[in-house]
Image (cartoon, rainbow, N blue to C red; front, side, top):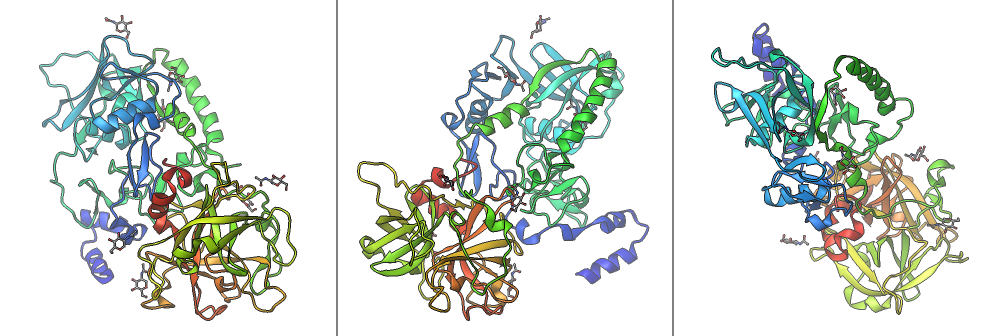
Length: 600
Ligand SMILES: *[C@@H]1O[C@H](CO)[C@@H](O)[C@H](O)[C@H]1NC(C)=O
Ligand SMILES: *[C@@H]1O[C@H](CO)[C@@H](O)[C@H](O)[C@H]1NC(C)=O
Ligand SMILES: *[C@@H]1O[C@H](CO)[C@@H](O)[C@H](O)[C@H]1NC(C)=O
Ligand SMILES: *[C@@H]1O[C@H](CO)[C@@H](O)[C@H](O)[C@H]1NC(C)=O
Ligand SMILES: *[C@@H]1O[C@H](CO)[C@@H](O)[C@H](O)[C@H]1NC(C)=O
Ligand SMILES: *[C@@H]1O[C@H](CO)[C@@H](O)[C@H](O)[C@H]1NC(C)=O
Ligand SMILES: *[C@@H]1O[C@H](CO)[C@@H](O)[C@H](O)[C@H]1NC(C)=O
């Protein structure tokens, strides 16, 4: 394959299509990820819009009552006033019969239309917009593929735009005097230019924006093009640059790196550089909003914008806002959605103190692993587990049996079985749910839930100060090489250390098939260990947690201690149940709201 490319390059030096070929940085695209056909509606890769929620990996329409109740009136194209932008977008999402018109309550004369004028076909032309009693062309200023996609989508072209730079001339027999145009600034996923904000500016006929929409599958796949999920093809060099050229974002979601202009989220997504440090989390791991001091985009931009603004005031007194840009409202509504508290430690010294590494890890102090629990059957320490909120404990299937639920006791807050610390609590178990496809022979689906008994006369389990660990909804939150923590009570070498809560730092290992051929199932299991094998899961409890922290130091249970061989040997890393693969299974049993931090 590589050889053929080289030959092609040599053969066609000087020919124009070779230019494209040499620009191809195919290494940027992750082929395996592309097979999943991710789009802007794949919650594995992106956050859903405030008017959507995530169900089985896809952002689907929310019902209007699931939106925040805040009253920030907006007017729709059907003439109806909605309480806020989220509620209107939810109606649009469900019925497709209404669209955003303006901010504020509806007045008469409310209407919006967008048409393409003076093109050779119906799928191209100058962009003319009618809003209320104003009809005007769109300005070339700030017109990019982002706005062009929105305009084409509005006209019903599902693939969005293929060109936004083409110029169109007025026919000779048309006598129009252009005095102003409407400037739009989109984020890219709006469904009408009215949402992008429309500002009237002085203009002449040279200042107008044109567009060519993606009409049908006329463009063919060749070495220099990328197939968008929506059926459009774009030049390969427009992938992984932070710009949503496809219109469905599919060119930005499977990237091993980004071209200039893009910021690379650790989850393999390229976002526009301007989104870094803009106060809104765009990468699912939060890595676009950390280490913002100094390179804070918002600060730098503020001074730049100030300069521009002054200039604009001098030159363009006439600018008149016809429709507000709804991005601020979108952000505000997003911040009003319910949030759960999980994964935040009361003390953070675990990550600060670097003591000498002891075989089998280090001894934990109070608050280090507040989600750690111990399951006892009678007098014996049975297994570890992890508190995930409500009355629910997550553990390994091989740890528990369904029909002896009444015999289990769940201990929280234990640091030492010899000398009890304050804050220990004991809970009875109501029921045990074992994954229906758990296999005791292959250890596949080694995952189980324990529901604790509620306190008499109370609706809750009152596990405080035990803090739940978060549950990851996406398999892209952590990657091979990331440092994580495994913790557990007992099963250590030597009697003295037997009964204390210990933890160790381990690294996620990619594709463990090379260590455990035929027994490692990549979709369901993960591996972690240290280069020298000094810290290993088998020294913690089975069923206990492997937690990893996102960029904001929020802890997620990423694995459940499942199996491994030859403890402490780097050739045999510990194997864990991949919790993110079971997000839907867990939420089916415990309720989506309990564990959904986002997209709820
Ligand atoms: C829309 O109008 C509301 C008042 O109803 C205001 O608070 C909000 O800032 C406006 N949004 C925009 C984007 O102008
Ligand atoms: C156009 O609408 C605006 C308010 O949207 C109104 O103030 C103005 O009088 C209208 N002009 C005409 C000619 O109807
Ligand atoms: C127009 O685009 C420039 C550069 O992308 C940006 O800085 C500016 O804020 C945009 N104008 C408006 C009104 O948003
Ligand atoms: C268990 O396996 C069957 C057969 O492969 C599958 O249809 C079913 O969805 C699985 N159950 C769960 C909870 O994954
Ligand atoms: C955090 O720790 C302090 C003292 O160590 C304690 O008073 C407080 O209740 C703890 N908070 C939580 C949420 O555990
Ligand atoms: C994992 O390793 C196995 C065997 O070494 C290989 O067949 C498989 O393609 C690898 N998967 C990935 C994603 O690298
Ligand atoms: C996360 O923890 C590390 C180590 O304690 C610290 O250096 C970093 O500033 C923390 N990051 C955030 C976003 O709190």
